[in-house]
Image (cartoon, rainbow, N blue to C red):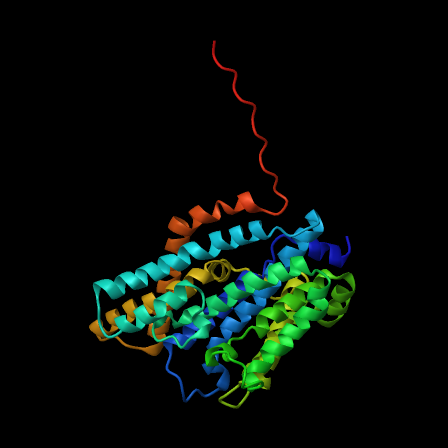
Length: 365
């Protein structure tokens, strides 16, 4: 097999859960530690973990769709949306139900903000409005859900036009909004800051690596066994940009560095950092990172109450408590609740044929 054939035959990219773990730990660090006065700029940029999530998601979803089209000759949108719904909706709406229940049973200063945000979160339009409560984190989930709604349908309807025209134009247009272009465009302010760019970079990476010529070009660039170290160094340098506001070119450079890192970790499975990214705790945190993200604000509230009550307060201890607590809650949700829905995904796998209808039994005489 050629290197490209091995890449196309890879059923599961072994390093992506490890990268997801790094992403979610960065987000938890950002949400649990005080801002301002960091000795190094990169310490205050854990929020960029969401953008790395986006690059991974765009790459993985598009790669799966391209492989489905290669095997079956088409893309089943019904199966795709069924699989995504079974993965995303159950824990998401469980989290919303818990937050609503807390607001109902313990009405306080935060309850009005929760009731304001709940309809927008429930309908995946949280990136269109200014959210006011702990549900503000759902802006990223809304962004990703909107991508799921549009991109696969566009890829199926316009398979040639999508990668050559629609994808680059969409990337340029959506990446230009944070620069303040077209201020007359009637879109909400927060929508202009929504980072669709890294998702589309992940989509573009999937197309490049799916094509033999693109793969060869990428392999020469980041196909070395130690390439992830170089890519990580570029990303660290980008995240260390000295200005407080990284809107515009600095953030775009960070996105491209993230795409470079993802490429170096998927283009070959035997790269030098595979061992670290495949350690069980790292992989496991990445595997349940969606649940960690969903439930970490609820855990944040509980850990904060407990630490204030005991008088044992430390920023590092608080970060560790929220991280471990969120992991525990995510595991509980995954094993007792989400897994029941995930077991149904196999019914909607690409190319799966409906089971044959058995003949009607002969009536007893």
